[in-house]
Structure formats: structure tokens, C-alpha cells
Length: 478
Image (cartoon, rainbow, N blue to C red; front, side, top):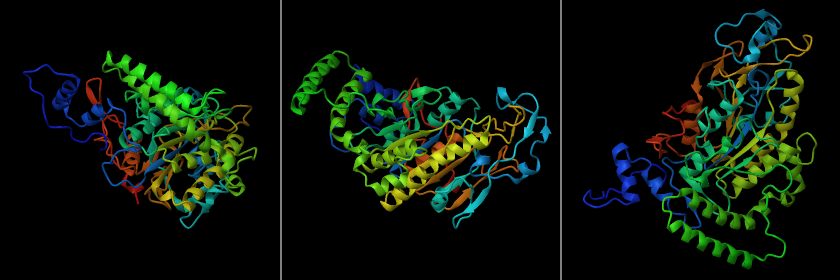
């Protein structure tokens, strides 16, 4: 069952001592029993080869690939052209209200985009000319210009986008999805992360399980060398001998746990050992891209100097969801272009353009795009202005939480449409405006989950991804 459904109605008698399960039931009954089923099921490891759960609604998407553009890509220089900035280029002005960041003090100047824009596809989507490959896939994409964040500091903004909480410590979106739906392949983690060599600001807390059981945390794969350290057994160790070792360890751990009832971290560690053993069989075959034909490798840009790094992530993301991984997050960056935005953003666009376009094309060819949600987003957008640095030759943009670059594809989204709008300068979203919590709620809805029912009892209350509820952005749905 999806997390948060009604619990067993056999209530314990108050005349007898309460065991742990009965106590949990009493807590749920006094506050609301939305998450009790999950709490009880978390005490027991899955006993079947399929650990999926029933969603709250008929899902439009069964899996999600989240393309995380860390650093804050500029909507003005990617998907949201602003001709008015060309007319006002280098016009000085005074900013009123709250500063976007510490860099927004002093004289400010409007900065035009250094890029030309085109209308692409039958839908006529606006794209910077450097999106040479993605322009072929825009009719599969729903562009959204109405999103707004709440922070202009990278760590807090990354936490907010990834976990719904600016201060960190809460479960990541991928953890919530796998908690609600389970895994379709018991030999693989339900939530996999493909980070850059340097972790995003805020570190591994961006894919944390938070207060959910530890097995729901994201599993990061290393971008260089062995994707998972110690994945292969030591030389000379046979699979039967290794199985015997695991069985002995499991028995010792089980005895240890019997005298320490309710220690969820011990249960999670035992489960992680078992998962690690099963992964040794399945993971190497998935991570080895040599099994792909040359046409597919060339399609993604594997082997090309500019695209190889992100091409491998996109191709691996397809291979992972194809084999049952529920949620994959792939990081690219750094998009924090306070200076030389033409050089910086131009290079970044060219490094991800071909891999992302290939991912959409490949998913569609394999019949996966229709029930795979692909999301492209950074932690915030950028301002239409900047201070002049580098002798007046260094044009860039500051952080902007009021407008963001974002799009969705596959999985039941309103493909071939642009939803929402920013003002004439790109400073603020003004049409179909929604906060990040509504974007989270919409993502869950596409996956068949109800944010108000996908809850977990922690610290005295039932918690949810949106923190305190949100609205589905129906304009984004097909």
C-alpha cells in the first residue's frame, strides 16, 4: 500500500501493557493515523522480490530522472528571452527592496543576454541558439516560467529544492518517492545520485533520508574510478563463501538486535549489507557502458571531450530506470555565473545539450518516456542586472529567487507548451506563479502520490515533503 493509508482498526486494550506496536498505534490515533502503516512496515524488511507499493492515484510516471543544474542557471540566457534588456543594456538603476545577495550592493546595470534566441519545434519554444540538440526535442517538453524559490544562498536553496526545507535535515524528494512507492528491483537502490566530482553546496544532505528509515537515502555513484567502492568482492573470495559470510553476519546481527528492540539504524544497516551483496551481482552490468552499441554512445556524446562527463550520467540514468531504479538525480554545474556569462553559460549549455537531448530521444525510442518524468531545474534563477567587474568587461548575473529556469518532459506533462511568464525584464515570475512546494506536490502527483497522505510521524507530528501542504500546478499536467 502507498504510505499513509489507513491503519489497522484493532485498538489495544488500555487494561494491558502496551508493546511498541500498540504504542505507535496510540500515537497515530491521537494525531491522525495517516503514516502508521509506514511506521509499522518499516520495522520489517521486505520478504518478496518486488518491493513496490500501490500509489494513491493512477500514476502518470513510474520513475523520475531529475537533472539538477547546480549553481542557478539563468532563465534569461537559456529559455526566457527578454528583448527589453537589449534596449536597456548597461543602463544604471537603483535597486529597491531586499538585496539578492551580498554581491548586489553598489551600482547596478541592466545586462542583455549575449546569446541569440530561436523559436524551436512545432510549439515555437524559445531557446538560446546553443541548444542545438535540445531544439529537436522541445515538442516533448513543458517549459515552466512561474516557479519561485525562497533563498538566494546556494546551500539553503539547494536544500529547499531537494528536500523542501531550507535548513536541511529533511528527506530528499527521491527519498520520499521511494518511501511511497518502494523499489521495482530489490537488487538495486530505489534512489541513485550521480554527483559531480565536488559535491553540491550542502553536501550529501541534498539526497539524505532525513527522518525516514536509512534505507531510503540516495546512493551516490562516484564520477571517476569505481562508481561504488568495494563493490567487487576481494580477490580469491567465491560467491558461495561470501554468501556464507553474509549469513553468519546476519545471524550475529539478528541476535544483537533482539536485545535492542526498536533500533531502526541497526535494522537499516543489516538491510544495507544484504543490498550490497545483491548489488555485487547486478550493478557491474549496469555501470559498464561498453555494452551499449557505438551508435548509442555517439548519440549521447560519450567519448567527446566536451560532453563525455554528463553524457555518461544521462546514459547511466536511462540504464538505471530501465532496470527498476525509481528516482535518479544527475548533477551538472557550476552555473553560478557572476562574471563572463557568455563564456561560462555558453560552455555549460554545450556540455549538457547533446546528452539531455539524447536522453529524451532514447527514452522515447524505448517506450519509456511516456511513463518516465524528466525534470530540469536549478536552485534558483538569475537577475537581469549585475555590477560591472573586470574593468567593465565582465558581464554576469546575480542570484534570483523570484524567477527560475525549469522544464519537464514525459510522464504525463503538458508537452509542447510554455506555462507561466516573467516580467519584461525577467526579474520576477508574474503569471501562473507557484512556490517550490507546489512544484514538489505536482511531481508527487505525477508519480501517483498525494503529498497530504505521504506522511511520516516524527518529532511529535506527521511530516510531509511540502512541509505544510501545497497545490498541484494543473497547467503542467496533460
